[in-house]
Amino acid sequence: MSTFFPRMNRLELTRAIMGVIDDDVLLVAGIGNAGFDLFTAGDRPGNFYMLGSMGMAIPIALGLALAQPERTVLVMEGEGSVLMNMGGLATVGREAPPNLTIVIWDNAQWQLTGGQPLATESTCDLAAVASACGISETTTPADAPAFTSTVRRAIDSPGPHVILAKIDASPAAGRHHDDPVFLKHRFMQAVGIVPD
Amino acid sequence: MPTSDWRQDIVDGLKANNICTIAHVSDRVLAPIVRLVEADSFFRVITLTREEEGVGILTGAYLGGRRGALLLQSSGFGNILNALGSLAIPYQVPFVLLLSPRGGFAEHNVVQLALGKAVPSISEALGIQMFEMTTPEDVPVVIDKGTKLAYVTRRPVILSISTRLSGGAANR
Image (cartoon, helix red, strand yellow):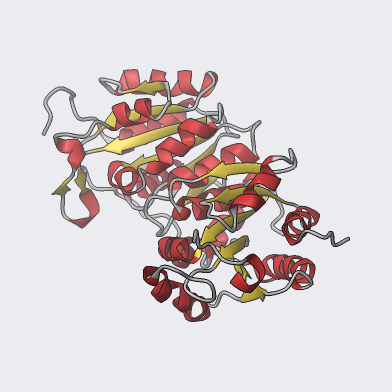
């Protein structure tokens, strides 16, 4: 484990996000703990949860941000999923939607499957990857207060932004709904879209 | 109104159905279509790193009220299976998969055979409908009715550009 950053807590940071965003910010959560802690921190119609499709949260948020340029979109995604679809960061860099903020939860392991260590434990810096993909607004906050102010700044300024949060491996307490069509309809209603 | 160019008819048919987000991993068949959509400001064209990304982007676009199409080869169809199975299908997200099939008529590369020939049975197993365009006359009706079917059934449809129509993606 890296000792350069004190490990923060994902649920605490998710609650911090909920505390600084406006009601109309659209939130997308990747598979697993990102979604579970979003549910616990504050379930709301404007949250979109994935149930599978590992790696697709950032592309979903990108498509949403391009379709809804007046809305702020924030996606929370685990480092394992980012590693699985690292090309997605290149596409975000190229498309460069100013209304998109990406939060990467990095505890350097596949936490849900037993803590197998990942490349971010040692050799891979996803903030550097994002930066090399042309996402210039890339930050690795050192502690929870810095994380909170970074999220607030990201939402208030043109992006895309990537915020890499080094977190601990505390298990998620809750579980979100698991009916995909319900989750989709509820979210689209929050966006103001009638499915066609 | 059909034109003398079936590629333009594809683009016109997508546009008439308000398909405005185009995600693609191009090939020799798809490249002229990509050029046409890139020249039309109606479309937002996104070059992917991998086809699977396109399923995510089109899902996000749909959640945000925009319709889309993913342009891909049959090889790329192999790259999107889990995203179809665990995102587009269960969440009931419609879009067009505009397919350039490999492995059949006019193929020159043996490694394209297996997946190219498997696309119909894989799509059948997934419950995704597939319609083929084999002549220029097929194009307007397949694009229009196929696209409408995706949105009525709330799932992706495959609209396949037969190599009999395109001449294939072979480079020799």
